[in-house]
Amino acid sequence: MSKSTSRQRMDLHTTAPDGYKAMIALENYVHSGTLGEALIGLVKMRASQINGCAYCLAMHGEEARKAGVPQRKLDVLPGWHEAPALYSEREQAALALTEEITRIAEKGVSDATWQRVRNVFDEAETAQLIMGIGAINVWNRMAISTHMRLPD
Image (cartoon, rainbow, N blue to C red):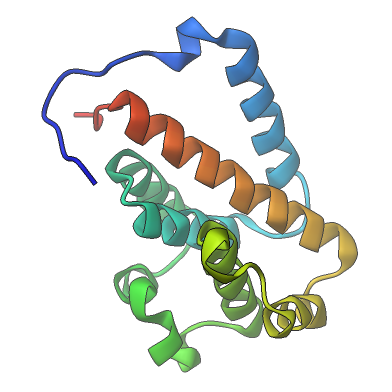
């Protein structure tokens, strides 16, 4: 991935306001269910780590901490597989799905991961989780491609 220190290329919020509003509507949907802000924060952090989105990592790290995610969970997140006692069954299932959807071109979503998710999330929550993972991947791609600058 090419790194750049150049200025922001585009402000999608002002250039494509209708598209931006659609993304906000999707975010509102994801946050309207029973997933919980802490779980959503972990999902957003993990996808943003995989995608290398500094802007989203800064934003969602702060949001996750405000939602009560302990700093230790955030510190260990890239190696969550190695620390199963630190994450609940729901968190582990959501993180597994996050990784497979974010890297979908590698091998898709496995039946094992799908079953793991369905064992701990109902159908509506599973839909919200999938849409939340999709949304953060879109946000990551928008932030990286336009060189969104980290807030001061």
